[in-house]
Amino acid sequence: MARSNLTLFCLYDMSQIGAQRMIASLLNAWPDKSHAALALFSKTGGALALLGPNVTVYDLSEEAPLLFKNRAALKLPGLALRAVSYARLIRRLKPKTVIGVNQMENLALCLVKRVYKDFQLVVSEHCHVSSNLKGADAHAGFFGWYYRKFFKSEYLKYADIVLSVSNEAADDLVINHGIPREKIRVIYVPVPVEQARRLSEETVDDVWLAKGNRTAVTVCRLEGQKRLDILLRAWALVKRSSQDNSQTPFRLMICGTGSQRKMLEALSHELGVEDSVKFLGFQENQFKYVKRAAVFVSSSEWEGMPQALVEAQVLGVPIVSSDCPSGPKELLLDGKAGFLFQSGSVEACAEQLLYGLTHAEDCSQKARIGSENLARFDLGAIVGQYAAL
Image (cartoon, rainbow, N blue to C red; front, side, top):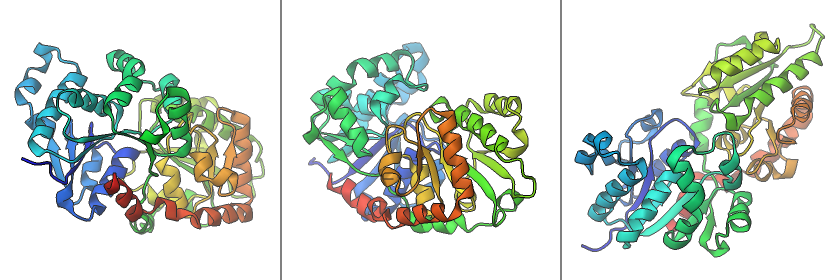
């Protein structure tokens, strides 16, 4: 049986985070649904609901049921289990191109390529790799060791294309990890503009988001990489700088869930800002909160090309972001389309936040520049770039 024209995307699960929502958008917009499909190691996650009815999803548990049933007894590492399951699926489907969307899938597919070579392998890095390797949320355990030690040699030997989501992240792969420039493709994060704008019109019954508010909103996982501790400490400085009760109060809304929520809530109490901070938890429609914010804020330690920032730009909301590697500077056109502050600096974050919340005209101008440069994130164009791989 000859190879099909299928492009197979491989993901761990469909948790509601940036990469998963991006893949859902790509598959929904793929012109010929018979030429694209999704394989999931775990067919779970809120983003499953984002997939259209015509998107084909393969559950890897159906590819190696015996191994899955006896996983504990066999003590197979997740990497080996993925490789066996992907090998069975790829041999059966004979796709033309297989795209690993996250790092364990990348390395499992490299293992498959050792024994079955009749497909083009694209591995994706949705982050700034050097920062990810040493960051607060770096992979731990066996896989962390394996990834740090072998990802470079595996990509060099077995990947046909290494996909990056920003030019800065691509430069990091070349300069710090020896991946040849000719092997790398940069494709930005797509955003379904009309869908985001439509969802943003949904009503929000919250006085904090009333017209004329001075509320900052952030949307992210509550994990170490996002450095919300810096944001809260900066927020305390912002609050101390505004003691005029006659003015509209400064407020901060945090959308998202994660392992650090209790710690961050405790920190807001310790800093005395709990009355001006709301933890909203996971929001299925975050767009309606972002749209009504005075500014959107990000304090990340590192990124790739942060989808939440792209979505804020789509909605015309002014952005205040850490100048972290990588993505924000590229997205915000070196500060022309938003406010950048030194990554890791509480004082710089507070200064830019305060400016953004009190200088509406400058904010509007930067947001307009961002809106004028949205073509690079056009969903249709990016689907075409993926299909061309």
